Picture: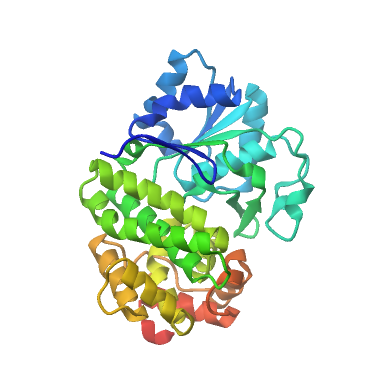
Length: 389
């Protein structure tokens, strides 16, 4: 079993088995006396909540729970959370759950001290400078899935219910002050969630590595994250209580999110679009789209794909080898081969291409994209047909 460790990159991270019990020390160190726990409705009813709440109760810390968070959190969810925060007199946030709960929690903490509308802080230009930084509330992030890595991010993805578009809200102060990485919290995940979130973490690292921007630190982190996922995801899927596999996957997910400071790409652009339009789970969307996006990008990523193959010890390093690895992994994890198999409707393909093109992730894709090329990518992923590309 891996030993407990404390890291300070990119924020303070407390890593180790059963470290959720240290939530009291985390609150005290940040001066949080009355936290709002932000989670989703399903998780709020599971025994796993006791791992978080019992230490708070034993320490006499007054807490509140807000669980009105959708799988793709909306601005309305954030607004309701801010209202709960103020009504309960909370002074900090504990974001507890998967990516949706973490994103909602971080955004609620940030917006609780802002007067401007949430969309004023969309990640466009210098919008983040509009924020009132005099009293931004601190947050603690505790992931229960090994996927999004939102616990170490300075941005969140929030859905605009009117347009169904997913938008990125950004401010450096949204980075949680303390992250608790406890592999034990991931033991009882449904197998399909382990699979989807694990591939989500892989997508983060792959897209970051393929981004044309220069960021050698992100590249190094991405490569190691990919190796950890290759060596541990199937084990975590088949042996849910394997301590080391769960620990390595949680670490790899955090690393992937750290690496994508360098940028993401077309997989996320299209996945965000499908999540906004059809409420498709983000990890599932990424898992299905990934091999088709890599194939579409093949003319620009050959050298980098070969380096990945060499680093993770795949024979015959090439784009084709990397795609085969992903297809084989996806099959082993029982992930659908196409969007059609996932019951996504085949309609509005032109609109989908236009929306995906406008997603912030598009700008750092390895291949220059157009609305038309996104429509092709959607069709290929829908039918499971590489020849469309």
